[in-house]
Image 1: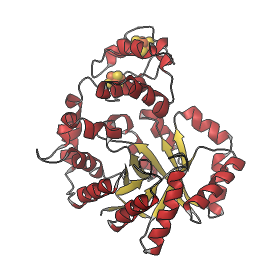
Image 2: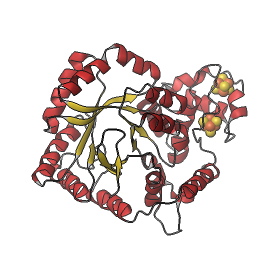
Image 3: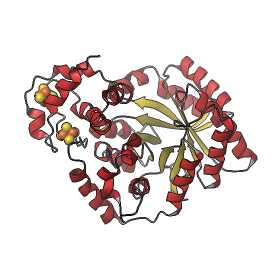
Image 4: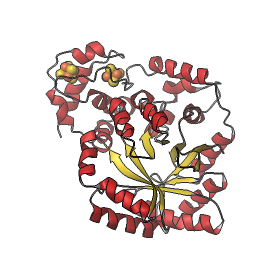
Length: 362
Ligand code: SF4
Ligand code: SF4
């Protein structure tokens, strides 16, 4: 296992982390605990969950798994999250979480899922930072972190405030262009950087032909190549994999065991090759993001990618609502001025795609 610094905290975290959002059988506690023990024995020491995963069942099963790790003297750090922002709501939340997780303090506590800077301002106005600092003084949490779906300049701006010790965000060979600017702030503020969805939410293993550019030899499995793409990024502290089964844990540990770092130059070549390979898909470069109608075009086009990759309208709709928190009908504001298409690096038919999305209603 490779260990890296989590920002300035002094903690050494495993480059491979355990995400508690995809257990295949959440009610089979024995299986979930076996998965956690197997991961910890393989050197994983970063365990991430959230109250919303399986409606608190993930935190509950983590509580049992962490007790087992203590019994076996296997070291671990805990991470969980909160949507709450007022002091009374946060107090109720953290007390419930500590009970479920069966621990005295959460190591990395995340302000959960910032989807816009306005959303962050609203939580700040509710006093979230003061309350979390109080919790830290009381020893209920150790580090204040954030999880975010922001992209481009917005994620950089959020992190440059300097109020967090670490960040959790989606980053993979599929969407790396949209989040690259986060690393400017991560380096500047010396933050811990945990990346989630390393396999692009399943897009990479489901479409290996699109991600050939990641491979260093023809027989390299695309999943190992996609993980190596992230592990080679020196600013990433933890790559969070949402394990569904014991086999998933074994496969990721084996990939880590076989991991041999590539050079910075090899990584740069892969990034360059990515644009040709992902033809027809939005790469999230955001060159189009100056819409006079304030339409968040990269977000709509990212959601449209899901339709192209899965041929399912439902995947598109889910991406809009669950990931980006925007409505399909918002795309109807397009006045077809053509500015975005002229700027699009992938020459995508943005106007036609937006009309199609708007036609989905809702
Ligand atoms: S064509 Fe539509 S989406 Fe593109 S910039 Fe003009 S109004 Fe915005
Ligand atoms: S310019 Fe094109 S590829 Fe880049 S984010 Fe906009 S739609 Fe996507």
